Amino acid sequence: MEHVEVEKSKVFIIVKIIEYVPNAVVIKTIIKKTTGNVSAVSFDSGENLTEKISPFDTFIQIIEGKAEVSIDDISQTLETGQAIIIPAHSRNTIKANERFKMISTIIKSGYE
Image 1 (cartoon, rainbow, N blue to C red):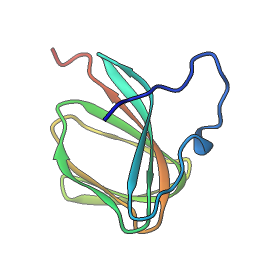
Image 2: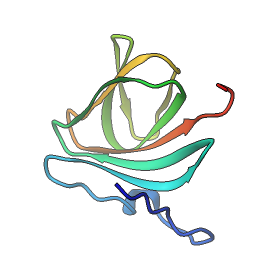
Image 3: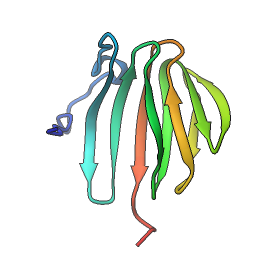
Image 4: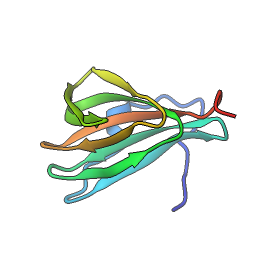
């Protein structure tokens, strides 16, 4: 899948750069570098990301709606404006009991 970054030096409204797609999770790259990336992600109701373990810390912030985030079997509901850091090497899932949008920031430095 090709990652096309958002145009630099141009103002944008984060919740408007990504749309909901029925029965899908949509990811739009905002910026991608070797040291990490920032993406806007939309989840339709009932969708989720399969459980994974990342070798990097991941910061997520909900920008619209509510998300269920599980880290090492501890589930929390995050609402618009709330954020959490998923620690590196933790089992995690992100689930949409209702549709929502989030920003995901992965930091790759410091793990060399």
